[in-house]
Image (tube, rainbow, N blue to C red):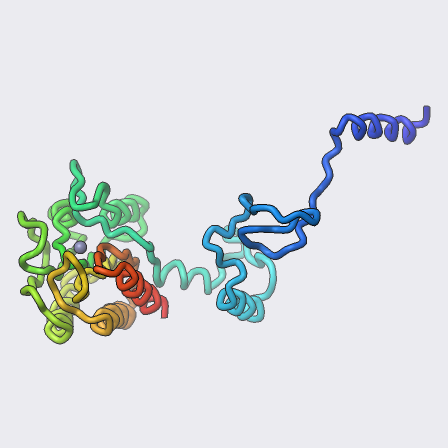
Length: 280
Ligand SMILES: [Zn+2]
């Protein structure tokens, strides 16, 4: 039997046994549901975890990026190099939409915090030889006692913490520079204080990287905060910190830390303001 006929017979036998794989065709854009071979199915294999694949803003940003940088990968990190746009993004601003677990100690977790993410990240960067000096700018209304304890003996790490004086934790651990504010402190007094202590912290620490714990809990509508900043005041706080770091050429890693507004939508709005401010 000629070879071609032999192969056709073999393939026919496999097809009859249902062993030939047929490629399916998706006829719809990315999304939570897709149309596959004419049937609508739940797309559990999609990587559109955030449901943003069809977001108009993302589409516009992608179009702008394609016009500027072209289509396709275009660069090999090891051989040809790394696009300047990627490098700027990686080295300028990083943000964790969570984190800021500053009450975690080496041997115990407290106050909603199990592991101290900022100290862990700092130690990992140091071990990898990426940097030596860093500053932690902790603007969550509660004192970062765990961070202070973990970094107390480290001369290369500097901690700045702005706290509600009468708030948790009730047994304090001293940081390098702290500003304690009375209950009910509003925008003006807060921003005045920040403008005093942040430049001092940067001057004393000369950091290669700043970790910022933004904290939505100094907000006047917060159930645990005890301070009285408005949403505008919090935006001004974030913009001031961003501008100080940017003008000093210090890259920043932001974590959101605490936020417990009566209405959770207020906390989300404040968190969103932080993200937009630091990415602007
Ligand atoms: Zn807090």
